[in-house]
Image (cartoon, rainbow, N blue to C red):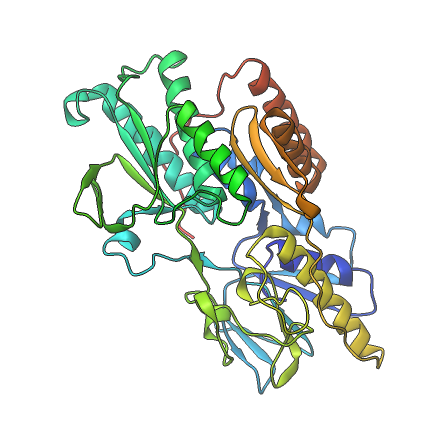
Length: 413
């Protein structure tokens, strides 16, 4: 099993204590709770609050073994995985859940200068960039329009909305509590999207609510504004307008291309996602399953692909594991059917949108409480849940902000 994200973990949990030997392979020895990465990037949570050691998760499951290493190739015919250190691992069944990577849509300079938010390393680097820019604006206001830094977020999906709201709150906390000498009237967070609304996967009403709430909190929301170029000092829009920025956050989408799944000898769909059969197996290789963000997971047999969400990853990982057990028992596999449990996005403190099946929606404080509760439930490890719950409760009451630390030794992924 390659990948210890939501899909890989779900698959391994279904196979734990079953009469099979499971080897989990990942180049990180921890699982990352990706929905809260923006909180790490904006100094709301520590990295350790959203990560948990894989070996600890499966410490009571003797048939699950973790192998720390980066898988670089899969030989489908020989059923063999090659790692970066040239070690090889043979398999009878394989689940590939290697996720995706930031997709820069071919925009000039975006890959070099924009800061994605998909991994824990991305979040730590972004936090360093944001906090470093704030300190630089305090020390040398002449380099930041007289002490008024601007942060640009590209992409109006859930990640972009959440990050923009959290950045605005970080500016407020830094000025009020850290006494950074930054001009609060002219410091800006700008959220750009090429579409005509935010949160395109949600209802129009919730998209409008998100835009109105962000604007009421000081975020500049600009729709129908495609980005043409990103540089080290800002972004250029398609109409030629230039926006200077201390940091550009990229929330404009993902692609499977740079990942291991992107190298598989298989058909690939939009964004490089691997095209799979209805049971999530690879065409011509029924012993191989591709799940989570890496796959074009069908909503139902022959249906359109599911969105790249944590719930899709969890359900598809579990489904693949169950099909392996069915095959080993001599039973036919079953097609995957996605159970929509709704979507959520936080806009900031005491504000979130929640869209549940059958059109039921929550927003504002109720939406935020629902969002908080669900994320606490899905956090891995009791320690993580307790720390995050206490931290969020205290922030709700007093709003002191989180660990505003600039790491000098951020590791690369």
